[in-house]
Image (tube, rainbow, N blue to C red):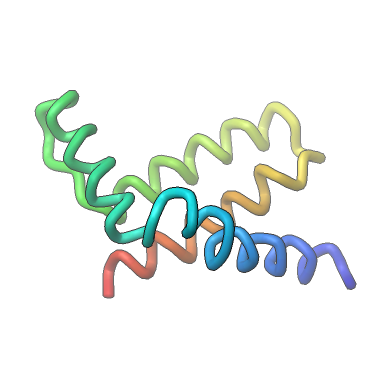
Length: 87
């Protein structure tokens, strides 16, 4: 399996398996997180904002350690889950 396929395969496995089982569906999890962030920041936050901001966190970690496949996998997962929250 090539590296691109491996990252996407791992992300798919996590967001439709372990992560989904641990934290619930992304729309519910990101809505809950958005509500908490909104209360803390006193600024409107939508579920897709949670995905985008978490992606920025992953990008920051990638800038520090670009060879860590976990950050790339999580970045792909946040992109997919973020899109789901907009549907």
